[in-house]
Length: 254
Image 1 (cartoon, one colour):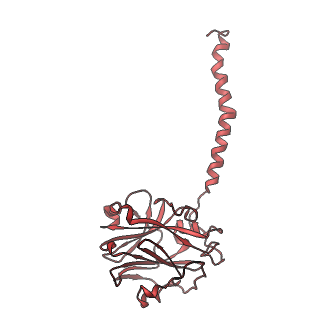
Image 2: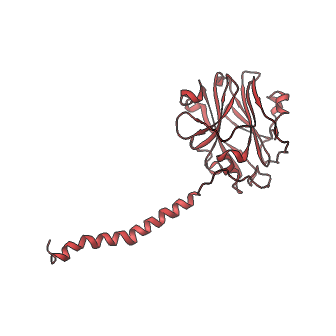
Image 3: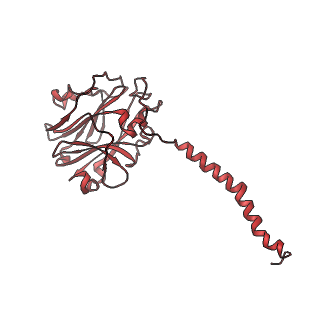
């Protein structure tokens, strides 16, 4: 197995209202004990499992994949509007962690469309890696600073967030080099991670501020409505007046 590790400050995980995780039954104890925050919850979608834990500033995830995911890439993404989009979150826009199973490197990426991801330069996992497990399964894990990942920070800043939709996918080849588009429908999906209500991991603490600002969807609907009112109240009468001007100038002749 390949692993990349950086030291992070120790923090305690918040208590989440979720199905409790038993990662030691699947993952090596040495790996489980290294996670900070520790893996507290688990959600499943078919043959995919996502174990996760959240503190005030950090998110740890470990995605368990089937043996069919061998010799390729794995990806876990944080889509826009993740607190409301599940189970139909779009693939893009999203921030993602993309792993190369051959090297064990987990790279930050930006998903901007239905094409290969773009490597991100403004954030990266603090600890990450991949490994083969007994029984042929595989695992990709990572810890990230919530505030550093734009879409994740935006979601966690929503005080009413009780869950978060995340994207998962895997496929053959190199994801950054014509491999991302090679997966089929059965090799991708959306999983909703319970947060327990309240941003910042559901523990009631102060959520980190988003690292990028976005106007809420309601703002654009308000602008759209204002433009429609202006069109009907101003432009339409002006058009009628202009259309009748030639007739008035010609004494009413057709």
